Length: 259
Image (tube, rainbow, N blue to C red):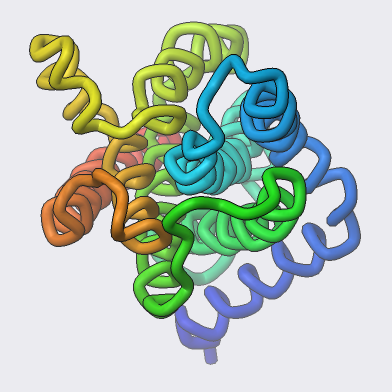
């Protein structure tokens, strides 16, 4: 008698979480070093040198959290997926499990979501410690913060599934050079979306970037007194994007699995 798909799903999740727990220091170093360095330069050094206003940290902290969870989630799914389908062929072992292929793909996305949440939970206190007092920071709606973190991490894990199954191993540099880097710089992580009203064309174009909705959603949850996009709009956009990424990612995953 074959085990139920959800038992297999749970076993795969536990396996991936166990692997991450054993490599936690390296995982945190790989995924949070860049946001923390940016926090130190723009949230600590520049305000003290007078090059940026001290109130800038209120706009910076939510964006740094958004970058952390997005970067961790994408990496956690896309990079292993490229390797598994490329040179290691480890995906073949998972495909032998007595479950539909979509269960294996969904497990990868859930594991990536967990890693994205871990990265955000690590960066939040570290960034707060580096920046010091932050104008407008409010933990009164911590449930909303958790909800936006989960939703953002799931969206970018689904995006990682799409990238990891659509990009070949020899094109991995392309993913970071032409996709991830521009997404971070134009994802409203380091400035509020409403401030882009000074450049209306850019303000409209960046709306295709999922990081915009994560960053603005975190601002609405953590610094609600500062300018931010409507929380319902940000959450709705992330739900829509995650559904699109999952649908297309599952299709490309199934195609690669069959081939």
